[in-house]
Image (cartoon, rainbow, N blue to C red; front, top):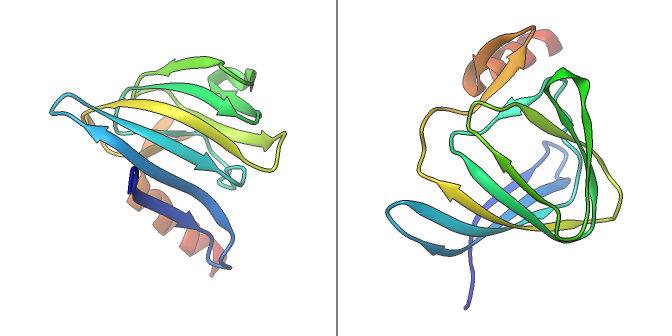
Length: 133
């Protein structure tokens, strides 16, 4: 097998949101293909635990950045994001999107921008569960 699937995210109802295949890994960075199949459902923008460079290989989507800026990402569009940058996929313009990603080593935890404050992903999930009950 050429690629190794390393991550898959589905909603509680079983809807596929995301798949990641690792192409190769070094001590300094990892190269992956990301398959994106659904927009981000969380209310708030999120950050990643690593810096990354993303190149759209197939499809297109609208990404929301801090400050309410919307960014249309289409074929060969390249974006560099620091781990501290918040964003979310607002809308898929095609049924699926595939990107080539170069990710640095982990520098922090996943998090969300909640009213200008960083909230770690575990705390954010807990808060979401509490609001539903």
